[in-house]
Image (cartoon, rainbow, N blue to C red; front, top):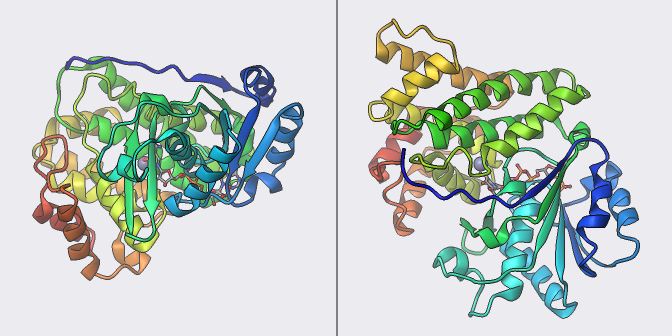
Length: 386
Ligand code: NZQ
Ligand code: ZN
């Protein structure tokens, strides 16, 4: 196992009516920037429940943070936050609202020229406004990590940044909020959590028995519980299991002491930046190609995956076993109603060169756990599905 430091201070309040914990969590803050998305919380009652809890606070609302949160929108919140001298950000929404709020939190305290440099130039920052979240869509794990992914429309870029300073102080997870999600968002969440686990699991072995066993178990839970949620949207336990699985998939635990891949995500972000496809759908397009094209160097972990996640008998020829596991993965995505080819999303073949060129320009030329996925290999990965 590799050396690691594991740190995760996020307090999780999980279950029914956990929103009441807001009173205590916010007792030391007064000027609260309440951020949310494009209106779902006003339709499903979460907005009123939050407002009820904040009756003794000065609340500054900032709604309208859309999917794949945009720098251009978020900078408006940064101005408001500075003017109003906010001392806390309460983000109520899915990964986009939470990520956007993390950017706002860092940008309000940012001292340099342009807060975008924190993403584009990896500029370090040493303070951020504190943030708490109420998660409404289990998928990204943003509620229990310090990462965020922001899109800049003007330059068609989608970049990630992160810091322990952006880890929420607390996150409230009420599985019942999932009842109002459209089926597609449930499927997206299942795939995002699934691929987060894979990015930290299917690399090369370092004898990390706990992490390998946790990853395989988490994938099994996602494979079993996800479809239950889609079948019976009001099955509380299935919703709860899926929600907690998605949080566990990206809170740092699986990554501790093991190599990580993330090539599927980095390639996927380019597809979203260029064509606006949902994050999880880009992952469904890219992952089968990554596993297949890189199968030799990932072979030991792919065999572990085949045996421990898909229950495939490994007495067969190894290459056949691996192909079966990759096929089962793709079939699982299809069973959730998510398609896996670029052409399914009307993305032309010319996109492949465009994506490779963008990655090359950004110095993302060497992706993957072995830093050897260059633009030619990205091309092969994207052609795998077409
Ligand atoms: O905007 P509203 O009206 O709230 O509607 C949202 C949005 O349209 C809706 N929604 C959310 N909760 C709902 C609901 N509708 C009904 N009932 C509810 N309870 O769902 C739509 C999608 O929301 P969004 O937040 O965009 O989805 P998700 O949570 O999948 O977040 C995706 C973003 O997170 C980033 C992605 O790149 C993408 O930008 N990621 C963040 C990561 C992180 N911070 O660690 C890691 C991930 O890999 C990912 O990259
Ligand atoms: Zn993701």
